[in-house]
Amino acid sequence: MSFSRISLAVSALLLAPLAALAAPAPSPVQIELSHQLDEVRVERLEPLLKAFNDQQKDVHLTLVRRAEGDAPKQINLVTPEEYSRFVASKAKFKPLYEVMREAKQPLDASKLSPELVTGLVDRKGQLFALPVAFSTPVLYINKAAFRKAGLNPDTPPKTWFETQEAAGKLIDSGSKCPFTTSWPASVHIDNLSARNGTEVADAKGKLDFNGLAQIKHVAMLATWYKSKYFIYFGRRDEADRRFASGECGMLTSSSAIYGTLSENKALDVGVSALPYHDDVHGAPQSTLADGASLWIASGLKPAETKGVASFINYVLGPEVQISMTLAGGYLPMTPVARLAASSKLMKADLAGLQVAYDELKGKPLPAPVRVAQITPVRVIVEEELETVWDNKKPAKEALDNAVARGNAVLLAQAQVPAAEAKAGKPGKRHK
Figure (tube, one colour):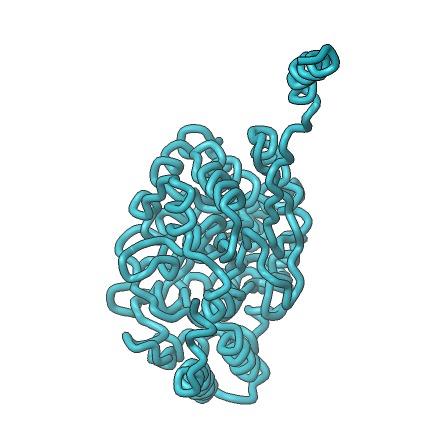
């Protein structure tokens, strides 16, 4: 071998380790989490996401605000209002249990609190999405307004009749808004029905929320509206803001807002269970847990699948669930996390959670359909309820119309897959 060849060989041996040292470390897999959270909740959740990213070398997660019509990101935080739309397009998503299995990560749906997984498991009880930000409706009271009206804020109303009596005393004391509500379809159709032991649909999914309990309740609210006991601020959560400002004496809304309300130094807030009708046999029953769930897009690369599974495991950790409860007021997902929350959170922080836990005790109704989760049906229901508030229709006629219109929508939706099947399209849609 010539001297030049020997020199080249030696140089190659010497330079090889240097080249290895100079090689850049592989970039972490970029995972996007699509959401529609408000700025306050984003700000509160960002430290949890930063902690996840700081723990990882191979994964970096970024929050991305979702606009209508956007393609799914790797992880998607789906609101209750979007639920039916995501179910209808579930070919774009991979069931969570399959994602975890491919990543060789354990996922036992039986370890989650049973009231949280309704509608998120398949027939075998396997999770296709994670109930990460759930809550249930409760009754909030303005303690200062109660004291002014001569009411005891430590004994809030338990029944709707007691709520009516409290509203009367509030209005006598000068209140311009004795009672209000957010999310009317969820609170006063879905949860009103569950709380009083009735369904909103039969076992086949046909709507029938125009029974005696629902008609009586809507008629009661109509009389409250006429007498100014009940002030209506729209279909979403404007009522939350009005109550937080001190304008209203009572509010029915999500248990998740308790933390935000209790932090308001200008508001002395109390929380109690959603009222029930004491003349309905078997009442009160459990309310319904509902909220945002994590859905995973299909077609992920192996490294993305592994990164998503790491985030799911992170979210399921008891300490992270406690932090999410503090940040957003959400129900911890597992009994273990609930016990940990009970031992670590302050008594004031636990007040709203304990009320929610108590409401969800017992065997919940199967609830094959929830009006608030089917956007076109929810809109119909809210339209019909507003005709009652405007004194254009009696409660029975409005609910009869809502059921008939809603069933027509469900029938039309069911006919779309059937038409596609007849045309030979399902093979393209369901891979």
